[in-house]
Image (cartoon, rainbow, N blue to C red; front, side, top):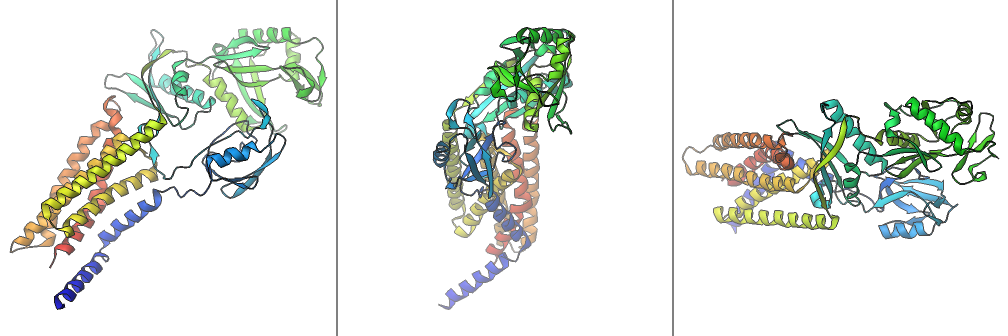
Length: 536
């Protein structure tokens, strides 16, 4: 009995020493921080994934917000959201609670179904974690493009950047969100553009980025000119302080200006009908107001991008009068009611064509992973990680046959994986299959280094001149060499010039982060923990 009390007293003393060590406390802090940052802590509701430009709630709510209720009805799932919006009728005032704030707006009819109300809000089930998952774990599309220039034209960095910006503008014009565009260059100097989009609807990017882009300006369904007639650059959206309208200026060629004048006058009645609102005008016409407030029903000028009507409005009466007197105007201004609409106009004008130097975009590769298959990959990766942990634990126990050694080694190894995930959640680094391979490599490397520390301490304990600090110092000398060699071995995988190997950058970065965290945080903590547990 006395021996039992003596053992308990000794263990209590060791535990007290453990929780007074600065290295161990730092380690515990990072574990607790990771446990806090990885879960999303999202409240009840559905997450807003996208708000359309023509939504009545545009500019009030934004993507990432959580919808808790609609017209007093609690929203806890996608089915709740669908049920709530089905009850809304056009012409009603809708109240939406987002992140504790209530927003009220009058909603109109759905453009595709006049009997239904239009909110223009897309939602999704909120993620349970703050981890960003890659395409291979949540599904999505990836396209690698090789831009081909016109014969005799050098593909310099300026053209490279402009091409990338136009592609992004085009994808934004089609309301595709969470798109990532990356530039890479191989060792031979060949330049590539990689476009990635996770989740549902990502298959659209394949067809969109393969085309050069077709901008058309139409009057009464007749194409007047295309994107070739637009002279860059496009002006930035600015607000007229007198009228409050937002304006986007752009320039067209003199030939296109004359063609627009002639085509417009050909479709306009000699005596346009007076109006006070668009409803007073015939289809494809709209009410154009002058400064005094009078209105005329004039044909709409429509902007199309890849055969999709992106914007339409009648010309200002002053411009119409200029055309009537036989003058063309190459400097045009598009006026909108909101800054969001003005940005949309700028995007459409910019996305109409790639730089003149680009002849075509060759698709080097294209991959699409169905989101359901991505979830299966995620489960498979989780099972693989669990199997690796169990295998490592079995090997450690078989080597030492002591739980007081095997358990701390496993806990420390798992803590490194947890802290790496915490770092990834903090910096929004994407976790994909190569990154999970890096996590497993981190676990294996960490266990190896902890075995080195343990063996050195046990070796020293068996000798007469046993010194904990001395043996720990020897172990860390070996570990430093291991960390440096691992880090330098991973660097080539991060270099964009190695086009094929660059796909493994997630593995390289996670491995480097893992061994660095191990050396600076978990390894010193384990060394001190092992010293205390192995001491008499």
